[in-house]
Image 1 (cartoon, rainbow, N blue to C red):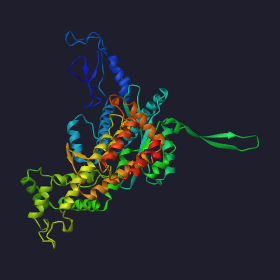
Image 2 (tube, helix red, strand yellow):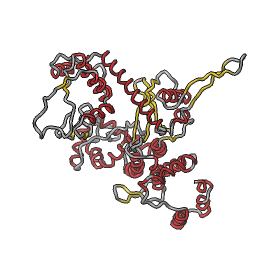
Image 3 (cartoon, rainbow, N blue to C red):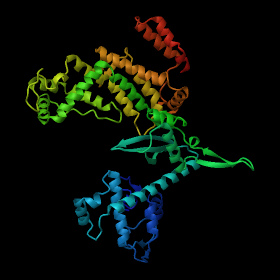
Image 4 (cartoon, rainbow, N blue to C red):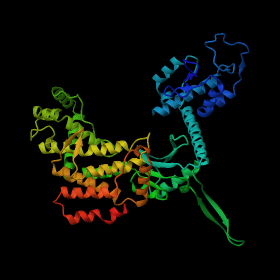
Length: 528
């Protein structure tokens, strides 16, 4: 332990980012901290021999602790113990920082730095040693997670799970995470399993079997085969005991058909961010909007490949008092549309510089060869109407971006935000609702953007207010009503909602009255 004050210490085993731990001076608190957070180190300390210091105590009253402490001194570590400790720290750094496991053995510069720091004869670990320590750490981690889940079961708390398949370089991993709120109302998250899935079909049946086996292995329910004897002359009949679904509170996944079919045996939801992404996909599929975003990607490719082009663009940005940047690439694989939104916003903010670049450099910047049409991007240069589409698409997509960002929170509950945020998003996507951007009212003048906006509105309304199962709507509503953050808000009654709908009808006399009344009193509205 290290610290400047007697009662305020920082555990060096927890790392520099750990919050200060306060101790009152006795070693019982230190022992409790080691037993809770550093069980392996505590077991190693218990194996050592302590030397009694006797009366060798400090005579300085100011430096003496307020309470008695154990007068003991740890002996010097042996060479093997020292090497194991250093190697373990190195492996933890490799894993946490995503460095290659062969780095301590293959990287000569790393070995030289290591030898310079540890001049006591300690050598960097070999690749095989690193792998062995990683396997040992994996076993330790599984034991800790299993113990935590067992304690959770004893408290009567059911965990929730989430998962997905990550693929890269021909390697697929099916990861399963478990979530819960402990008795101290703290949000907890643990990795249950990371299953190799490269040689397995990514079907719903395979995913369901892998999920149940992984959960049962960690103590979440039971999944086993039991033999039952039917009679004296009859053979034993095997039956499967499966309590995994009863031991899980709920699940959350994306909208892929395989994972949805795999987890249909559990109570759960599809990720709202992925659902909104499907609605935004319908927005971006509008013919003119799709064409404009294709041009933006082509222009971005030009600036990301042409060094001369970027230099000339930066000069144009400097003359317009803009930051010297280049457009971001649309490579967002997480949301599928976040990169396109950031790219469009960049072009909206840097429109003056890009148009100045088009006027002053009507040749290919990389080859200085004039084009037939006199533009840098061939037929990809934007006209006035297309610049308007870019700007107004940013106005619309900003609402979806804010919604998904709020629903990605990890330090606050998000299930109670679904109804307010999705309801607000569906409302602002209506054609008659005015929009705001950065605190200012904006107007959508492009018919193509209005059509795309209506597509987004229909997609969200269909998925959350038409096709969503009533039981899931009920769960969202209960979570929203019980959230203490809304205790000072007043929810609209049915009467106030009807008055609002009638007010819209009076403000829009061109809409047929019969159509509006039928929508107000349809079966769907009565149901929800």
